[in-house]
Length: 325
Ligand code: RIB
Ligand code: CA
Image (cartoon, rainbow, N blue to C red):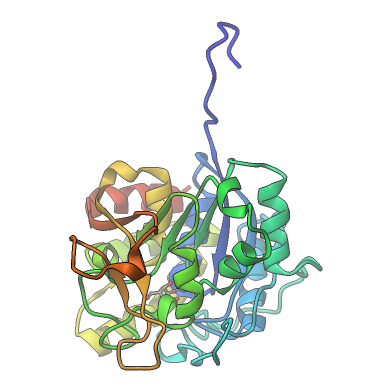
């Protein structure tokens, strides 16, 4: 409170990152840690790019590289809430989830608490203050919301990387990887009683870092940038082989950029449901864009802020400025 009695809004956003590192996850984690406007109060891990034991080891290693092992890491679910894990994305992120660079085993350990318990306890202890930033499958988030019915009201918000409202999928022709890895969980999260912002492929595939930008990251002399340079080499090769482009789509960091400066984004607001059937559209995120004869599945659902555009150059400079520190 300022002496004048005017309420002083917090200068920093407290976030919990729920992550499946993952090469682009590593970028996002370092981006958040190097941004003074963000306080990372915890990291929770999930399966996705690799199995949860691997993503947990990677999260610990990334915090060691950033010299932030003060931040607790809580291991999360090893499989989706009601289906089997589709399997890791080794071709995209390497067998080890970090471009097969051969990271040494972390010296630190995760805390005893499960990810969902850590999320519930941390949020309920600080009502309204915590934003969840999931950048992997949404199993931990959905489990936490189901465990504690008051969690949605107690959250400051959820800013997630995942989904595809108006564009094709990437994990399947229809669905984006984080959502199709646990569609049932995602459908719960998009119905949460807090502001939910979706940084899906609609915006992340408009946020491209070209080869020259990646070379700039490689030129930075800090430990974080040196690790990113090593793992981005694998990711850049993946994009070159799969899409014949030199550069990468900036998926997970886009959620951090949104936390830092939502004015860089174009958005629309619609209720969102997820296809949880076993058919070819499983995992597709469906916004209810206009009134229709039968919209019962969307009735009563809150609007989700769906990101559809970004000032990619400005977001790139915001991230590179942080990564260069
Ligand atoms: O579709 C991209 C998402 O899937 C990113 O979070 C990436 O890390 C993978 O998890
Ligand atoms: Ca991820």
